[in-house]
Structure formats: structure tokens, C-alpha cells
Image: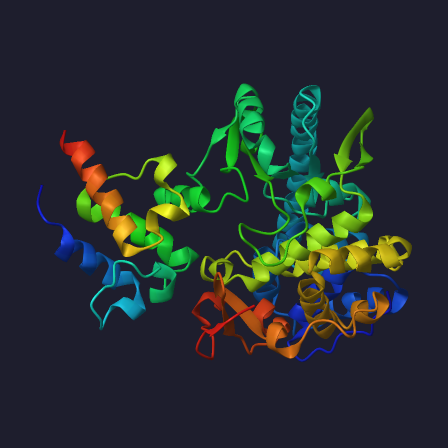
Length: 84
Length: 374
């Protein structure tokens, strides 16, 4: 499976103001990078469009995008599921 | 509740709507509305647009008709308003029948619930005149009954419905991330002028992870049975007055304080305040004893209630804060704030009156950097 890091981070930076000038810390809560209830929806939609995936209902919970690391894992999992 | 006549600085059109929203209670207000409606400088386009924005078309129509102003209003406008009022009355009839259908199904399963908002208020606060506009039928349940209620609603022919939204997927994701409501439900019907019935089922008095909330299980205890006009022997369960007041005020707070509602163009309107004013007027004795204050303090919602009532008093010249003895509650920082994300609050400097009248609220941005809220 291709490394999605560059596309993933570009996607985050499009929506999270505080993520733009700095390297993304994958352990920090995304709320600290400017995620709110509106941008959370926008980020998930952008991930779906960018990677051609669809978050199932059971993944549409806060835990999926608490940190950049958790969100990247979720995106990778959905890409793998789709590929198999 | 006493109130002085509004100033007319925002024009006769806005003054008419403010008077109607808070309810006409004496001859001086009747005369003021009549004078404003017959003034030569009245801009009908502005009045109709604002009435539409604030869901007051049927109420404006009723006022003009009951004041016998048929020949003082341009004929085409009069005819359109008359049709709008008649259509609203018809929709209320259809909604009443559907409400009873859902009420009976939920009651048969022993699920605790109440009917809220428009359907609950139409007969008790608006005298069944057909003047209270409603988009949908609203219910309140407990979070633990979400799955059971969804099953009942599907058996009744309802399905999750996101097509009403500009972006259906966005709405679907948003609904899943904020489980304070079930996904919006709809059922197709075959009635003249009405093709879909929407039902909105909440399971919180405010929103997911709100710092201001009253447990829904407590609010649903001892509901009052409310008759349905024109349907003999049929009633619907509604919140008892104290919780009806708390829900209505906290719901207004939600739509006014959370920035996402401003950005989506669905935040607070005049009639939300109109509901609160009428609730206080009609339940004054029950709201001014110590029980309300005790419940608010127990659940830490006093500042949120004071936020709504202070903005309401400033806007409509009412005296709700004094009446409910909340002068010592609420604070300037909260009063001028708006929530952007959990834990972060942005300052907000507009007056509520200016905000209600503004037609471009979504473009108004917070004036100060976010600070960590309580």
C-alpha cells in the first residue's frame, strides 16, 4: 500500500489553521490544532474524497479522529479494506 | 410580563415583527401594529422577507386579517398571506394526525417520551389559531431508547432523510458525530400540498458534551397530557411547565450560542424568543417559585438561562431576569460569547437585536481570538 503521509497531511492542513506552519504531531489532540465540530465534518469528508473511502457508521465517532495518528490509522484501514 | 413599546429605530417593518413575536397583549400594541401596517412608508418587500426569515408569515397574515386591514394591504399581498395562513392551518392538521400516530406507537411500547416545540406550543401558547409555523414534528426521548425508537419509526414508515440538506453526506456525518438527536426522519405522504413529513427526535435538552445540560431522564418524569384540538379523547405527553421552560430556553441557547448554527444559517430567530416570552406569561406562578432556581443550580445551567433571558430582555424590553430573580447570574463574558468548539469560546460583540435583523449572520465573525472556556 502506498505511503499516504503527504496527501494525509495536506488534507489536514487544508482545514486546521494551527497545523499549517508546523510539522504535524501525530499524538496531539486535533482539537489543539483547531478542530471543531464544523471542521471535523469537513476533514472527514475531505479524507473520503481524497482517498476514495467511506467512513462506516461505526467509525463516525470522536475516537476515530482524536489525534492525527488515530485518523491516519483509520484511513489506512479503510484503504486496505477497499483494496482487498 | 410587563414590557414597554419597542423603539422604531430599525424601521416599521422590524417593529411590527418584534411586536408580533412577543405577543400583542393590550390596546396600545394593537393600535401600534395597525398604525405601522398602514403607514405610507412601509416597505412590504422588507416586511415579507423578514417575516419569511423568522417563520412569521402565518402570524403576520393572521394579524392583518383579524385587524380587518384587507383594504389597507396591496391586494396581491393580502391574497398571498391569506393562502399562507390557510396552508399553515392545513399542515398543522396533517401534523396533528401524524403526531398522534407516532405517540400511540411509542406509548404502546412503553417508551418514555414527550412531544416538544411547535406541536406542543401550537395549542397552549398560540391558541390553535394556526399562526405557529413548524417545519417538522419534534419529540424528546432518552439516549438509552434510541435504538428502540428507531425501530418503531421504521415500522411506521419513516427512514433517515438527509436529502433536505444541501450536502447530504455532510449532514449524515454531522448527525453521526453529534448523537444528541436521531438522524432526521421522514415519511412520504399523499396529502394536498404536503409530500413529506419530517420528524426530529432529540435525546438531550442541549447537545452532545454540552457544559450546560439537564438530564433528559429527569425532565421526562411526570409529563403532562395535553389535548389535541379537534381530536376528542386524544392527548399527547409534553414536558411539565418547569422542564418545558428549561428545554425551550436551553434549546434557544444551543442555536444562538453554538457558532455552527450561525454558519449554517439555522440559528436563532424571533419566534424562538416568542415561545419563551409566552411560556413565561402563561406559567408565571410555576416559574417563579423556588423549584426552577433549585433545578437550574443543581445542574449548573443558571448562567445559560440567564444568557438567554438577558438577551431577550435587551431585545424585547421584557423583564424576565428580574421576574425569575436571576439578576445575580450570568456574566458579561458569557453574555458576549459564542462557542466554536468544545472548550473554546469566541467573543461576540453584536447586540442580539442587530443579529436577529441581520440577513448575513454567517459572515459575521468573532471579534477576538479564542480563549479557553469553562
